[in-house]
Amino acid sequence: QVQLVESGGGLVQAGGSLRLSCAASGRAVSTYDIGWYRQAPGKEREFVASIDWSGNITYYTVSVKGRFAISRDNAKNTVYLQLNRLKPEDTAIYYCNAVVAGFAEYDYWGQGTQVTVST
Image 1 (cartoon, rainbow, N blue to C red):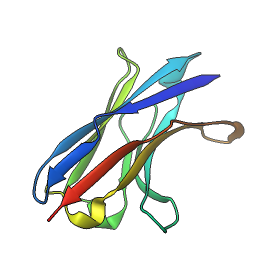
Image 2: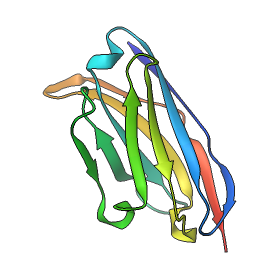
Image 3: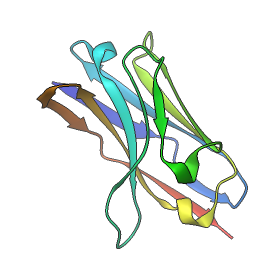
Image 4: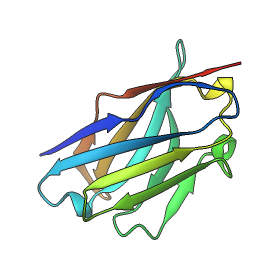
């Protein structure tokens, strides 16, 4: 079992920055791949970025590439998502997700953190 707690969300003006954190606890959390997803009002949850267990492989959705950066500190069991040059369309609840590739039963979600970008 893995527990995930997101933090760092808030209200920011367009062009500003935030750093989201996903603190993980439980067995062998450093072996999990971690993803960030977001869900805007009235929209489906969408993938934002992911990082593999080693921290060496990252993926980004096109709309955030070059603006957001994902990283992890396995010593602290924490994954970060740095959000730069924020746009109003980045407004959403941001969730982190922990998975083990190839094992569907290892799939955990946090409760989310709200990011609101004003014009």
